[in-house]
Image 1 (tube, rainbow, N blue to C red):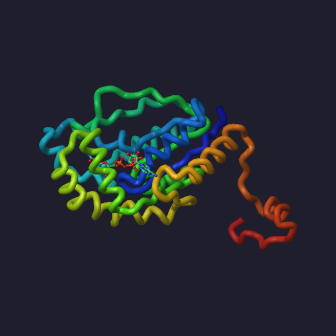
Image 2: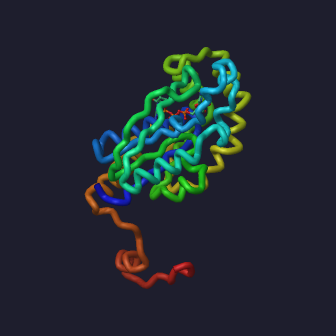
Image 3: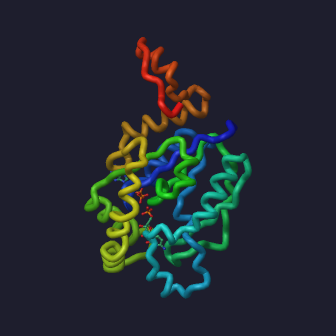
Length: 229
Ligand SMILES: Nc1ncnc2c1ncn2[C@@H]1O[C@H](COP(=O)(O)OP(=O)(O)O)[C@@H](O)[C@H]1O
Ligand SMILES: Nc1ccn([C@@H]2O[C@H](COP(=O)(O)O)[C@@H](O)[C@H]2O)c(=O)n1
């Protein structure tokens, strides 16, 4: 394993296709990639009855245990395994089990707020925002929440209008400005192939960042010095 790992943050609205992109990209790199879904880091709400947990705003940044996210991503980058929490959407809480995650060459942090927290964003080497129209996202979400997350149609619509949509506009969408790459629609084969290529280069040690010297070499001409450098 290379140390430090290469960290990719994949953000975007609910239903945009973040998980799909992360899974497709991770699939091609096998054991060299670890996926850290931010959903696993919703605050532990065991002290609240289920009925009260149903009413929580899960689209506000304060719903997440950021300290634990920072601590666990940093541990992986230091080469230390973590016990990642597991989340159950049907009971709106973590389960009693955790998943042991070993450090790997590439770590993908994925979730609506993957580009929100300054510290997590700073740990990312590549920041991706998956952008999909709101109407497509809500249609995808209705299907997924009813089939996979034990929700009913009325509940999904109420939640969308009361919290998901306004929080997306206030907190999620503005993080797009931090992205290096914007991926349209989710499973976009061109974007997924490019990300796979980049991961392959990281894993095989053939990736490189532009430096003034390498830009000059590529362009065959002198470039202005970086005022910060
Ligand atoms: N390009 C695409 N075209 C059609 N459906 C897609 C595409 N990308 C993702 N999906 C589907 O959209 C749904 C939501 O995707 P998911 O990755 O779970 O979104 P997110 O993690 O952003 O909430 C899934 O059923 C997924 O298969
Ligand atoms: N108990 C919960 C926790 C979260 N949500 C919703 O999940 C969405 C984020 O997950 P995506 O896979 O869609 O990115 C977020 O919009 C929360 O509203 C929930 O419904 N219940």
